[in-house]
Image (cartoon, rainbow, N blue to C red; front, side, top):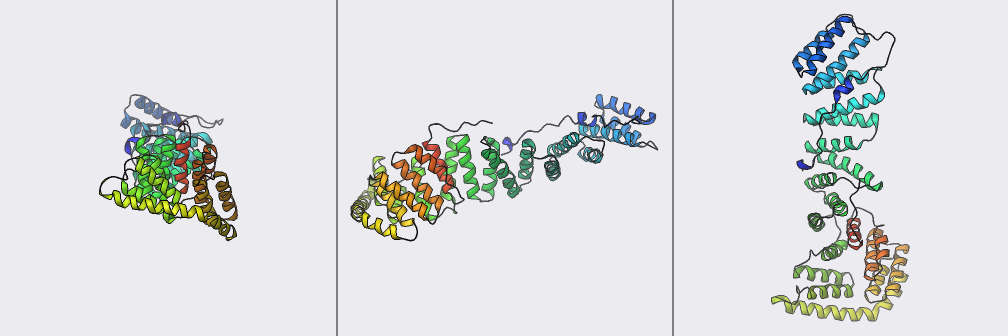
Length: 411
C-alpha cells in the first residue's frame, strides 16, 4: 500500500511565518531584535540553518522585548525550523503563533496544516494525527488533511481508525456523486483485510470495481464474497450466481452445489437452469461424475414438474401466511416458469406484506426482473438494496453487470 500513499511535500511555511501580523500603531521592532532577525533572514536565504537559528536565539535573548518583537521572532523561528526540518522547534513556534490574537484565523489554519505536514514527513504520525484532528475541529473538513489523517493512522498500523476515517470520507464522496480516490479504496480494503472485516473489505472492492473496473478487483471482490463468514446461508446461492455471471465458476462441484442450494430453497426451475448452464459450458456431463450428475438432473426435472403442478396451491397458502416470505418464493418460481408478470406482482405483494429481510427480498426481486428481461427495472430495484449482510454488495455487482458502461472515475 505504501506506493499508493499521498506524497506530501513541505508547505511553503516560510510564507506563513513572514505573514504580516495584525497592524498596530506601535508595531515597530526594537533595534537589537531587528538587527538579529535581519541576520537570521540572510542566513536562511543562504540555507545556513544553524547560523539562522543562532540569530533567532540572539533576538529572543534581547531584554524587554515588546509583544510585537516576540511575535516576529516566533515567525522567523518557525520559518527557520521548518526549512531545517526541525519539527519540534517548528511546532513549538507555530503553537505560539496560533495562540496569538495577532494571527489571522486563516493563517492559523495554514499553520496547523503545516504542523501536520511536517510531522507526517518526519514520520511522527501520532503528532500528525493530533495536528490534523485539531485542524479539522477548528477549520472544518479538508480533503487533503482527511487523506493525510487516514494515512497517518495506517502507517501506525492503527487499522480501526484508518477504516473509520476512510469510511467517513468515502461515504461522503459517494453521497456527493464523486468518485473516491483509488488509493483511498485500496487502503480501506487493505486495512479491513488485516482486521478480517470481510464486510468492509468486500464493500471496498465493490467500489473499486464500480469506479475503477479492473479484472483484479473483480477477482479480489469475488474472493472476499466467498470467504466472508458474515454472509448468511440465504445469500450463498446469490454469491454463486454473481460468480457465474462474472465467469468465476468453472468447477463441476460448484455447479452441483448451486443446484442443491436452489433445490433446498424450493426453486427447482432455477436449479435446472443452473445445471443446464453447467452442461452448456461442458463442465457437467464429463468424466466419472457424469452419471451422478445425470441422476441429479433427472430428480430436478421431476421436481420442476411437481412444482408446476402444485404452484397454484402454494400460491393460495402463501397468500394466507402472516409474512410474505413464502409468497416471495412462489412469485420467483412463477417467473422461472415463464409467467413473469404474475410472478413479479406476487413478489411485490410479498415485500409489501413484510418479509424476514427486505434487502434480500429486493435483491431477489431485482434478479427476477433481470430474468424476465426487464433490465431497467432490475437496475432500479437493485440500487435500493442496502444493509450489511452482503446483499447490498451483491446487488451493486449486478448493477455493474447490467449497466451499459462502467461508472466513469471522475473527481
